[in-house]
Length: 266
Image 1: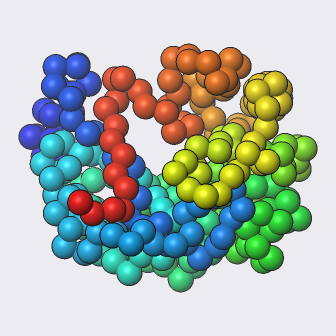
Image 2: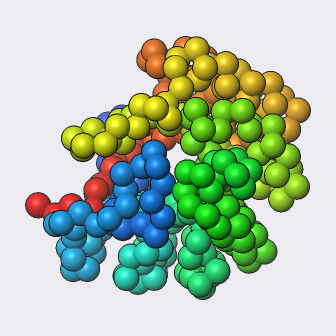
């Protein structure tokens, strides 16, 4: 990373002039699964073309971007994902990637270049496949093992809802077996804003969310396989009331400026 980027990062962290140090970039809404509680299944009508993507990334880079999390949809379905990762790494931008794991073995050469792979896993096979489709559990685990064996840090991301809140112990047993930590987050109906779909039937009530995360706190005290940081878990003690924001469950931190970019153009 060049001195200019380091300087911009220091200025942003000190609160003098904001810069998008960390960017979450949904490069497409295309996905090769159709998870019941998610609306990121098919590309948006006006998704950015290749040239527009690199123009946007270049502008973020000039503003001080140091880290990017590629998201979707599933970013591995994007036809230019290999080139995007190469472009970012050439500029010493740290790249993380969120995926369902299905394409990880096929894209392993690109996966080797990222700093971390986050793979969605909603519990044991029965629960996971019920929400994401038959065979998706095995593909997720295969993808996690492939990345892990290639030396790439891996995390599972578990979306807790009515469909799987009773499987936390089983999922943690799998995490211990594979030695891959799990980051938990609640299913939220906000994914379906401005759509005709309703995800409220998978969303837990407030008391159930707090109880589930209290249990995760207890597990974390005896296991390193809970990937949520303590700031994240403290946040869920009073969820959805506002608390100091967390680092590892998708919340913005004032001292680490972050930006979000959707795949839509214009």
